[in-house]
Amino acid sequence: MEQTVVGLAIPANTLPTTIEDLSRFALVGREKLTAVRAEIRAIDKVGVATGVREQKLKEAQAISEAVLDAEVRIGELMAEVPKAKNQYAMDTAVHSKKETIENAGFTVKQVQRFETLAAHPEIIEQAKAEARENDDIVSRSLVLSMIKQKKKEEHQQQRAEAIADQMTDGGNCIDIYNTENKYRVIYADPPWAYDDKQNIDGLGGAAKHYNLMQLAEICNLPVKKLSEDNAVLFLWVTSPMLRHSFTVFASWGFEYKASFVWDKVGHNMGHYNSVRHEFLLIGTRGSCTPDNKILFDSVQSIQKSDHSRKPEEFRNIIDTIYPIGNRLELFSRNKVRNWDVWGDMA
Image 1 (tube, rainbow, N blue to C red):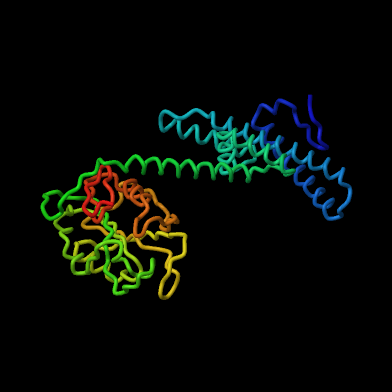
Image 2: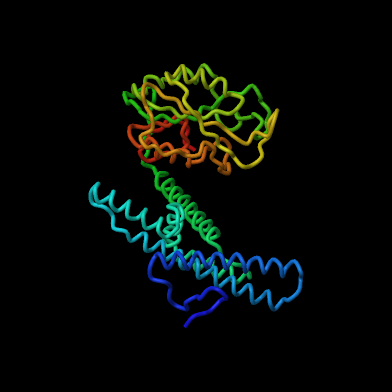
């Protein structure tokens, strides 16, 4: 049995079986959908014929869902191409797939989107239901956006679980002045001493939260002795102390390379602007490029919590791009698995 829309026959429980037929079905369907959408806009402009509009909306919903199902089926068929076991087979498979795509009238990018749709049938059904409930028309772009959001949420959940798993009592507190340990990865959040003594959160007054250190004291920490010949340093610094951070880099034997910006999201008082960010500077000693070539966004927007406490997401980034080697956190507030720590536990 078929639901027939003018110019397009939509099967009740079946679709064309070949990629060529599916592609023609999808092409005709999208053309028809464009025409019906135009009719709906014309009806809305005139502001009459409510019954006709409802009929056209149902027609557009049926077409859009059928076309989406056809694109999902194309994605399923393309995903079933056997994986190559050697280079010759791989070249042959790639050529065959490209030829199939071209013969069907699609681009490689379009087919990749179809394969993405096919991998998330539950989201497609959710999108269809929500569109009908809202008297709307489901679209491929909407479904892909929902898939992207789901992947983002899953990634955030995985990172949160990894961070929670790290935050144990497995860390080892050390005395940096009396150890022979050497470290490849060093993470530091110095208690910079500001001239500003105002007792306003975000406008100086850091002394009310922890013991501060003058620049010379920070520079004299035995970090150079603690570092391997090839090491990386991640150093937290605020805007007022930015120029002093390069003195610290030099004193500790590191050369500045790059930076992250922590966007705290919320408003923070400042003398010259609303200071809602801090810098996490990256420096190296010798040769110490990342082990994993994963490029995290240089700006990380994470809501701030306690005064001066840094988000654990940044440690997760460090562990991801530098998983190899001994690691040390200076001025730590927590014991963390696989890290040696030195600082005031809070």
